[in-house]
Image 1 (cartoon, one colour):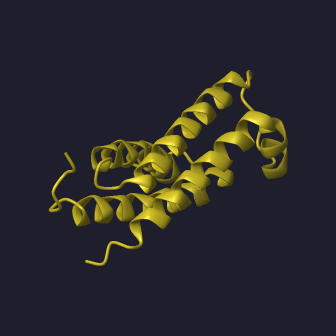
Image 2 (tube, one colour):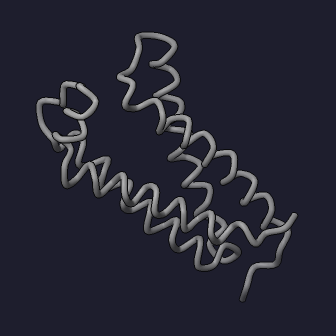
Length: 129
């Protein structure tokens, strides 16, 4: 499989999670208002996961800089995407979820599939010393 897409893809993943994280740290109330969703009783419930997104963005940037050396980090990204998708889709089919969370669930599902493909693609290559 051609692996030239992996570096730019992980740069995109870093940008995606980084921008979402920064947005929810800087202006969470505005985002909730834009979607007509009642925010939680304290913004720390939103800002802590936003900071985690920024940490994952940094990790995805590291993967982009050297995918072979940082291949093991891809699995943590898979875990992040599985966690979000499983919760979002579970609530979509059971009790419902505000529509603001749905597009990100589908985007994360696409990221998850491509993370798995990239992890498998670089799996047979020798690790640098």
